[in-house]
Length: 114
Picture 1 (cartoon, rainbow, N blue to C red):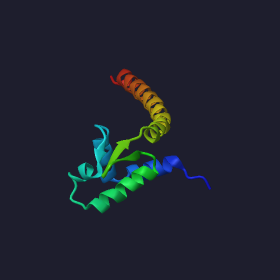
Picture 2 (cartoon, rainbow, N blue to C red; picture 1 turned 180 degrees about the vertical axis):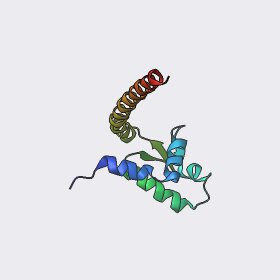
Picture 3 (cartoon, rainbow, N blue to C red; picture 1 turned 120 degrees about the horizontal axis):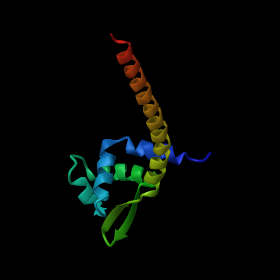
C-alpha cells in the first residue's frame, strides 16, 4: 500500500510546533539546537517533531562533524499548494457567482421599492 504523501504532509503541518520549525527553516538552515531554542521542550522532543517533518519530506538533515543541520524541502509544500489551488479556484468562482446574484437581487429590490 502506497503512502498518501498529501495526507502525510497535512498531518505533519497540523502541529503548531512543526509549522513554527518550518517557518524558522524558511529563513535558512539551522541546527537541531538552534531550532529547539524558542521552545520549552527537550531536544528529544524537538527531534521527534523533526522526524515527523523528515518522514513527510518537508525537512532534510545533514551532518557536519558533530552538528546536524536541517533544511526545508519545498516539494511537499508545492504539492499541497497545488491541491489547495484547485479548491481556491472553485470557491472564488462560486463566490463570484454569489456576488453577482446578490447584486441582481439588490437591484431588483430597489426597483420594486416605491
